[in-house]
Length: 356
Image 1 (tube, rainbow, N blue to C red):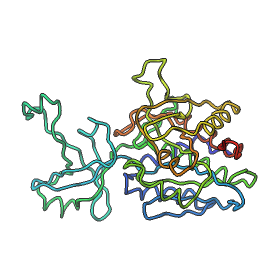
Image 2: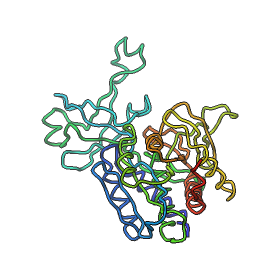
Image 3: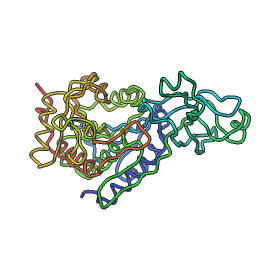
Image 4: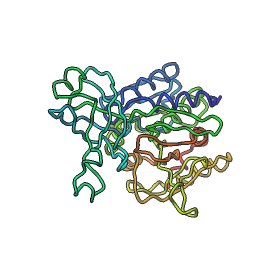
């Protein structure tokens, strides 16, 4: 039985609000543990990959992997200045220009999260070079007035992470969600709902094992260890992918809100397994489920690592406007469709879907 819309929105809200940049996915791990506790065994490795094995697994069946990455883009404190402000490095690739003025949560050495701002020099003080370039240096600021103040009163330390302080909201009348980290918490939401439904069944042709992988935004670092542990026959990757419907000519739009998940044929990391892609799109069509397709010249996913390990893989991307920034927009109906397609793929899977 499908989770109702209220449950989907509640789960998406908790995942979006979780503060979990690359390498610090703990809050997402906690949500996943709680969600899966009654119906699966949950293991967490040293990278913070979460492997979810339903209690109904049958050792005689092949395994279909469901993957979605749990991390989000953010930053890390690099140095603390004498005046109390901080240098930082990015965790992942934040969309250019979106950090300036962003309010953030900064983690302290004690593990608490405090508010801060990514500050930019007021334009009144820009140098001629800065005016010509149209940008000035950024700094991380929690309001400290000295390095000692930052260390002792605010508790900040080098090596601690920060994330955007955006709070999730949902417009029920219009069916639109706004929040941070939909890349890839929209995918995590879809994975958890689909996997829970499949975990109640013992009539499937495959085992379905889930992975909420770590550090995807830092070059897909987590998924390799998880895949080697699981040894799946094939993989279905959930993503929160960049929508292109706000700037692309109408006849070239390939990832639009409210038109279902997008399945890519090509990106900079992967040429999708043609037979598996045809199978998945055929399953969606046979069930009357909307799906989009694309050929991408940029971007990449965990599929880039998975397929190099000789595992046929498709990627279902939930369209999200303005990912890798402090706030993005998605339509939860696209998450629901991704759930339904994934369930149908597991129901109809056979070796012929991936063999030549």
